[in-house]
Image (cartoon, rainbow, N blue to C red):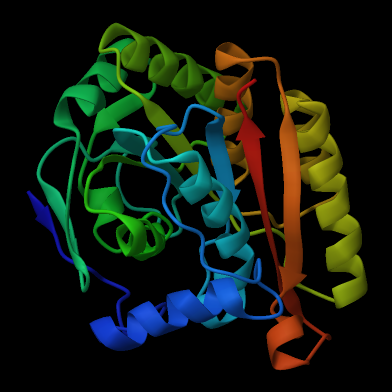
Amino acid sequence: MIREACVAGRFYENNVKLLREIIEDSFNCKMGPGSIPKLSLVKKGESIGAIMVPHAGYMYSGPVAAHAYSKLAEAGFPETFVIIGPNHTGMGKPVSVFNEGAWMIPIGKVEVDGDLADAIISKSKYAEADFTAHMMEHSVEVQLPFLKFFSNDFKIVPICMMDQSPQASKDLAQAIYDASSQLDRKIVIIDSTDLSHFKSQELTEEHDRLVFNEIEKGNTEGLYETVSRNNITMCGYGPTMVAMEYSKKVSNYDFEFLKHATSGDTTLDYKSVVGYGSGIFKIE
C-alpha cells in the first residue's frame, strides 16, 4: 500500500525547494530554536523516548515543532518512529495502524516498519490494521517532512487514534513497549497534537498551561480529567497519554517543556486562536 500525500500544498509546501526553505525558517526564525541542528550519528535517540509536536500548517506551528525536532536531531534518529495522531475525519477503526508499504511526500518516500506495526497490533486489544483512517488524515503526514529534512535512514509506524480513552492509550503504550522490546527495535514516539482550539488568547494560554501541568507531573488520568472537566479542545490527548505511559515504561518519567505559541502569534488576531506546544520525554 502506497499512501500518497494528501495535504502537501496546504499544510506545507508542495515544492521541494520551498519546503526545505520553510523548514529551515522554522528553525531559524525568532519563534523557533534559532538555528538548524546537525543530526547526531552516534546517540541514535537513546536520550529521548518521545516528543510532543503540533500538526497545523507550518506557517502557524512549524517553529514550535522545530524546538522538539532540534532536540531529536541532536539526540540522533532511532530505527523507527512510531507516529501517533488523532483522527480528525471519523473514518476507519478506533485505533488504526498503517502496517505495510510506504508514505509518499514531496521530499520522497518513507517506508513503513511492517514487522513492528504487526507486532504492535498483535499485542494490543484496541489496535487494528487499517488504511482508511490514514488516507485523508494530516496529523501523521505533516511530521514526515521534518524527519526527511535530516535523514532518509528511518522507518515509521503510523497510528491514528479515534478512541482516545485512557484505556486505549495505556493499552497502546504497553503494546508499543512490548513489541519494540521483542524485536529489539530502537524507537521514538512522535505524539502529534494541537492544543486549545478557537478560544481567546488568554483562555488558550490558561487551558494549555493546565494541560502541561498534568503532562509535567506524568498524570495520565489527570490529563484526561482536566481536558474533560474544563472543555479543553486539545485534539490529540490520546497520543499524548500514549507518550506519557510509554515514557514511564522505558525510564524514570522526565518531561521537558520546550515551547508554546498560538496561531495569533502569526496572524496577530488574538480573538480566536489555536494553541501549539512542544516538548520531549527524556530517557535518563
